[in-house]
Length: 395
Image (cartoon, rainbow, N blue to C red; front, side, top):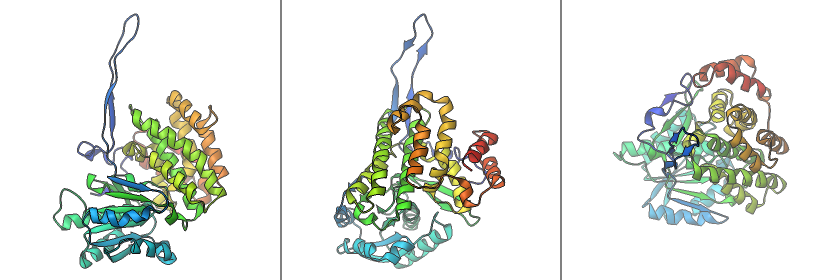
């Protein structure tokens, strides 16, 4: 299940699967009648939960890895991780040691934006050695690769109803572990993706002790990515009362805890707070992941080697101002959560600046011609002229 994102709208590219894959989708109906006084009918809706079954958090929660593998009846796993964690070595050894009697028979590494060639190579090698479960350890690229390997191996095993058991141990705040979708980069360097209910993980372990080797710039930029999830979910069309509560709480927690992580980079307690806030940010994943800032970011990220978290840093305040033109009430509520009570986009820009994160696309040697192409490739739900204006505002 692969889609090319070069010409397909970011808002449409997964639409053909929406009916059979209700990933945390919220809907509502309301009836209004015109009279002397308005008659407001009660709203109704549906909210479909789609989370990993088990989420463990807190320092030392890696101890839950062996019990989870036992619950899932896994005996031979492939670890999907990153080159930096392989080079660091110590943390990866802790993961292996925490498996008890379960064998880690393969360790597969993946680069930024999950190149398709590396995913295919991992599938080939894990097929050869024979595994019955996946443990992904790293950021979004490692976790997304783990999802796709789990589903492709399940297909080879004839398991049409699920992927192989998959446990994620995230080391960034990207929240890829909570999504029933996965992104990769094709041979042309363009971002593509797949969505399948079988991509949902079985378990997640948020152990902040295993994040201490993550560079602070990466940690913080993925924290802004989590903030982007919360904001885009909150601003999504439709009624989603449960997710709205969680999103606003995520915004508050991220504004509070990300600066404290900068001041105390080795404080495991603060990093745990960051992880909880990121978790709360992603309770409406389909709407968040297909929000305008995410889609615009993906369009330039893979092509120009910009990490996902950084694209949120570059674009998020500008997209908020654009979307906020027609959502004044929602923007006012966001502003209460961001602190000023009046300018949510401005608060986000100040937070990004205070964390020392990138704010200008030009820092990545991208100019107006590249941005014009990106806007034209996405210009169907929104006019390409308006998308270009957003890109240029971030330039």
